[in-house]
Image (cartoon, rainbow, N blue to C red):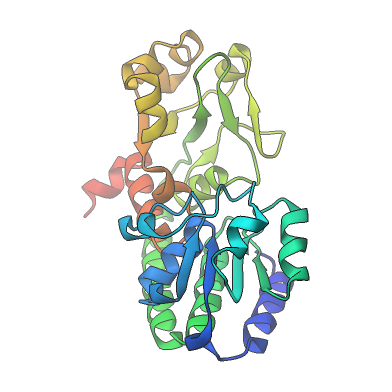
Length: 283
């Protein structure tokens, strides 16, 4: 996140009224929901979107649909005073409808670095009146990230990592720049094996081979959908990469890996240990 964006969000946080106890909040975005729970502010939540699956208790809250396809009627039925959402939420027409009713709608920028996590924690801490808890969480997270950075400064290489979001029914979909996968790979001391485009795109077999990936990174949900890691390694194009030849396929829980919430230091540390075995041996 740029300094200008951080300053703008900081001013927004400072300007928010301190009336946490009267708020009825709908949280749209798994990271935001997780922060409410981590700060002990979950009683403010009256609804969440379908990506809010962690912690498990969040699944018992009323759901307002998928974050990119929200229904104004579903949100309004919960009588919220505040809808807080990441920038991926939409459609814009639904958000405009909600604003027109007088409901406060707060859209939080989501940049895939650790400072964006800090900004989200600070914001929810202010909204919920849990500023001390937020400060403690940030201090712990920054300390963990600093320890990881110090360790990564000692490793000689930045392995090439190919993140595949979907592999069923044809060409695999791979993460380019500006994605959560790209962000977590960089935090863990890796290099995104896909260059030249932003977002997610389908890769041809030739592009998979050309990625020269040292590791293939997937979510556990993708592994389950494919029927196991063996099925991933059986893909002919993957088999021609250094990762495929060495059987280096890493799997992580989706929200842990890509959530960019309170557990991001944990995710980055775990991924770094997998990409750099020498870190584990040095403990």
